[in-house]
Length: 472
Image (cartoon, rainbow, N blue to C red; front, side, top):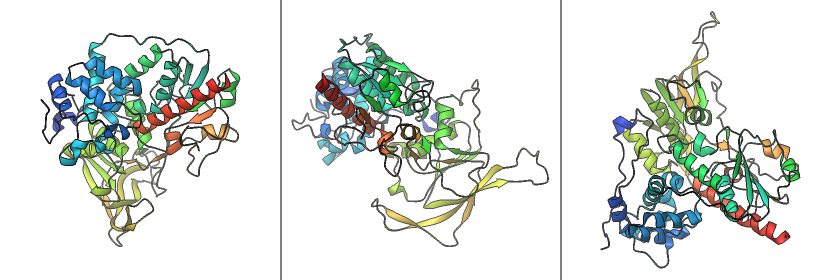
């Protein structure tokens, strides 16, 4: 019988007071009974509007139909035809603005929990299926992928399934890109990323770590090694700062550095050799998903008080609603309609050996009000004269965005980029202005979502295959 409940089955989670002090995953996942119940809410629309909202075009009603039948492995096989990272997408993809936003059930109630079901299916497969991906027959061609983030892994996986010999060059010592250095363990356990990467290796994908393209090798040198096409998925790892006084003080981090130290280098563990400031009072400047990740990580590292400082109101906050709600439940404070003007620090000019010299003591902010809409369509924040105030903190984390790393552009002659440093590509193919060079993900768009990066990797893989097959 169809489940006509107007509300989706809620995702079980750890209690806020408990999870705020550990790095275990917040959401604990559906049971089989919950998954079947939620699947029964799907009407199986023939027009499949949900698919139009999915950047990688997963056959959503079909995989949900298999869940209804209790065929969870069959559901996984359907998802994996379109997605190389189902366990990842089920956790970090913003389904509420994509596939679920198109769900007919959302017209009179809550949409079907497509993301929750995708996560359930992938987790069920990982827990029960003891299957090794079969190595596709070789087609005799080889391609290179720069970066092992979501766009690179997707591109690599799709091309490997077509028989290409794929080599992924990763700058860091672990594969996964932003999935391992940017997203905290409590949102995306790294064992899951490792599992997805190992599946690609079973398909024959070679992953070479500690390879900084532009330094270790150039794109021209990669072509000289016999690769017929190159995909650039190097991400957007260059942090931005505000340019206000005090940003060079001890205790000021970019969110990129702070999260990398915690996520990739495991600074949260007592046996970690990576230093990280375990501050008592923290201010995170910004309102996106990365800001939520940084704030919630600081809390788990022992902070007694964590502030989100954001210059617009809650309605304009760009982070996912679920992440904002989790942060609020955990006790994160939201200082909205506020903008930093200076980071304050302790200085004792009479004693240069004083260990407190140059340390953060607070952040000066000014209150804002919303004026007329700006180019983005959001109302522009306007300062309220004479409204400055100070928040006492000993750590400030800047989370106001990132830009593509300029290294590849600076070492690849003639590669066209826009004024933000993003690589310019053809929208339908991911092709750059250089023959055989394609790009996608944050290296093109700047910081965006995992699923959009995956969609770009898939688009480029199809175009690279057409290019090589046309030459042969």
